[in-house]
Length: 151
Image (cartoon, rainbow, N blue to C red):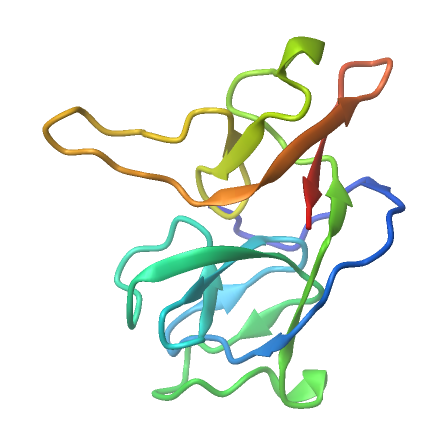
């Protein structure tokens, strides 16, 4: 899990629709963290546990740091104009295992708010842990850096 803001390389693509979210009470989104939305509409870092309701989708990467760790209700960071904005796009996200060109177009899943994987299920057959899809592997730079398209 991220412990600070980070910088991500980005490939320019037409932006997808972006919607404001309140950050769930007790959670912090770091800038460029992979962000999930709960069934109640609040945003949390991907891979979080102890969320107010079930995680239902990955919505993108956080545009700034939004801190709601000291509040008892879903109130976004005061410097953001009242909402956490989560961006769509094509980002150089770190993978747990480096993908290859044969993986281009494959679904990409969130391990946590920092790392992605090509593996959907992290558990066992008896206790599956299904990860949320972030997007698809868009391609790789000449140096091997993978880019994930988050629609």
